[in-house]
Length: 212
Picture (cartoon, rainbow, N blue to C red):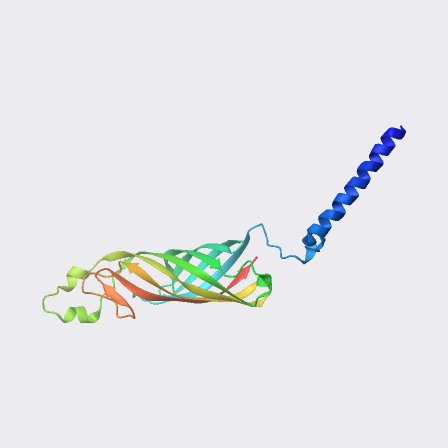
């Protein structure tokens, strides 16, 4: 019995000495873990409403999307509303990548910047025709009747400004390309570089969101 007690006491002494040496050789072992930056491992969800405008010639739209965020990545799916006709005119996908996420004070920042990619699909609708297109005597107006689907891709930078807890204002500014929306020679009268059935145009969004 005495032998077992002596062995146990010896092991306790060795363990104590080893722990002291580890603390001396590893200063960080004494840091209060509660003071270290932590990140949410579970996803958070939100709803966003934007006023969107691009140079594809369709004018502005009101976009509503639902988002999911995990760490510094945000994925969103939504719909495009025609504010004049009051109906859905397309769908969109958005990806946001927040910058500086791993800095110690990220969660406390009022303004957070991010990289943004936006894809928009506009359902088949009346093609865009520049009025000057009909000035030519060689053009038959009946030849441009019809509908066309438009796809838009844009990349840019954005910023999220926190107002109160879970509520924020968000805006993006970028540059992209559209495919479709007009026939040859009938380009929209908007800012950008317009070619036959495609163009390179700016993209702008401004709105607000709520994070659950």
